[in-house]
Length: 212
Image (cartoon, rainbow, N blue to C red; front, side):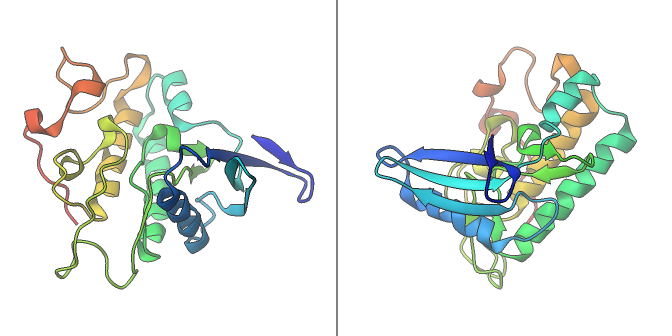
C-alpha cells in the first residue's frame, strides 16, 4: 500500500521481479485490468518498470480483506453474506462480459471499500479471452492453465480437464459458504476432517463439475 502524490490517494503497488516473473501472466493481468471498468473492481492506475522489477498500480480499498471480517464476526448472518456475494457476483459478471476470467476468487481477494462495499482485487491469475467467444461455449476451446487457490478451485481446475467462466462461479460459492460458516473454526466445503486444505483434491472427493 502506497500513497500516490500525483493523484493524492492511496494505491496498491504489486511488484514483480523481471528475472522471476512469468511475463505472459503479468501482461494478462495488465490487459485484464485495462478491459474492466466497474466500481466493485480495483481499477488500473498505471504500470511501470525499471531494470529489476515490473510494477502494477491499482486503486486501493481500505476496509480490509473480507476474510478478516468473516473471522472477526465468527461467520456472517445470511443477509450480510449475501450482500457481499451479490456484489462480487456483479463484479464477476462484468469481468466475463468483457472477456476476463479472474480464476482466484476467495475471501482474501475481496476487500471492503470505505463505504463497506465488496471490491474484487488481485488479477494475478487472470485469463483474457475474446468476449464474443467465451472458453468452453459453442465449441470454443477451454482454458488449460492450472491456477488459483486449492480450497476454492473448481473440480475441472483441480482435474486439469479444461475450464471456462464456471470456475469463477464455483469459487464464489465457496466464498459464500465460508462467509456463512467459517468463523474462527475456518470450516470450508469438501475438506475431509483429517486432511488439511493443501492436500485436498477433487480426485479424491468425487466433486461435480461446475457449469459454464
